[in-house]
Length: 198
Image 1 (cartoon, helix red, strand yellow):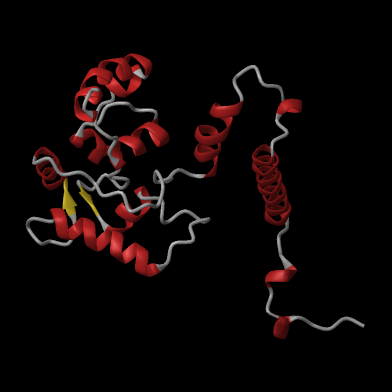
Image 2: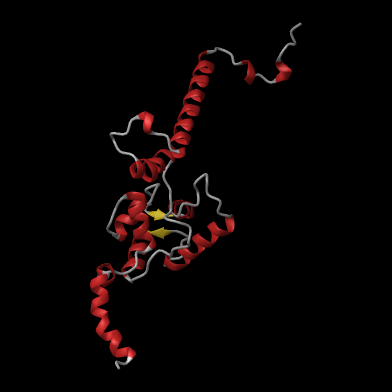
């Protein structure tokens, strides 16, 4: 009878034939790679390019607001607490703000990455940070529809909500246009200056 260890050694090549994907599985995807793939459709991680892509104000440094934003914590639907936001920022700034100026420069992030470090995965998802239009396009329309989709086929709850928001924005613009055409807008006059009409 074969010993269990010897049996396992003999069966290992067969197992890789049965499940070839496991034989070639690469290293686990980092949070930044997942973010690039899901949010930007980019499949290769380059530290310098990642930095520039997320330097939203093009200042040459990541601030707290930018880090919170690319982790998806400043979205209107984010339910993350201020403690979570502070924890994310503190972790990032403590790990790569080498000159202690309270922000992350491109050089600091590239150096951090080149030394084998990765942005931490805080378990908050892939980090949605686009506006409503971008998020709808990349996470719903591209997934379930295509350029041949007709308006009648846009019936998912996400489609309905998306176009409801468009309708509300359009109605608000129309109301503002009407108000802008009036020489005097009565609603803007403080009550104390209005003469009561009989």
